[in-house]
Image: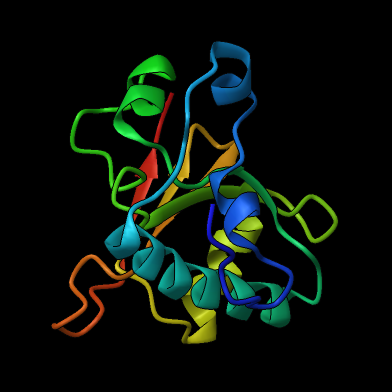
Length: 141
């Protein structure tokens, strides 16, 4: 796997890591376009870390189609394109508290979902040629 330029503490390996992929022997490797998307996503995640003053714990980043299917992801998941990540930052607060801080910060994103009250899903770069949408979607269990 080619190395991603270091963006904060994020690396390509970190954004592609999956215990499920290892367990099922799935090769979770992005193509050049997906890698480019991951670089933009990493910049956004780095801005969030800087704003919070703490490291994020990435639960899910890039997923190849086989991995996305294995974890029960929706067929059109933006994780497959390298545009989305799921994360928490328990040292700073609850996912709800962190989502509120992101919304108030001015950091650009296309979609922010508080999933099941347990983690934040962020999508950035989906509409790279348009202004960021800042769509906020609470998701109930």
